[in-house]
Length: 194
Image (cartoon, rainbow, N blue to C red):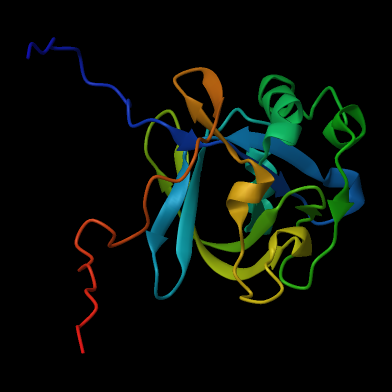
């Protein structure tokens, strides 16, 4: 098997394609598309987003210290891309995409009503890293769309929402589940003969 050496780069793909909503009043609500996001701690629950300083939402993020990470779906793919290539300086992204801002009880920033899952965050620290600053945040609440919650088990089924991911300039739908955590080491049960 041959390998080719490349220069250093950020090629950890795919990444979640999320819509981050910011603002503390309807007059300054905005949406930005972010692929550089992830979980960084379970207890306490923490995550991050990385944002360029020149993005329109950057100053709002710094000023308010709050944001909402909204997971996206195939149905939201066009809006996800549009919010990533258009600036809130020039457009009202809510009106242009038809997405709906929705208040929540966790942060002033709105969540996106159409998102299957919205993660409400309060910034703990901002790390200046170079092209992007990392907003490290505490998760202070999660809002889940009841359409994706199994009424019997209470389990959230994100797969039913048909989430999308981003990979080096392209969006992809997720495929079928091929296993679950621990399936590779699960012991097979055998029935005893009586």
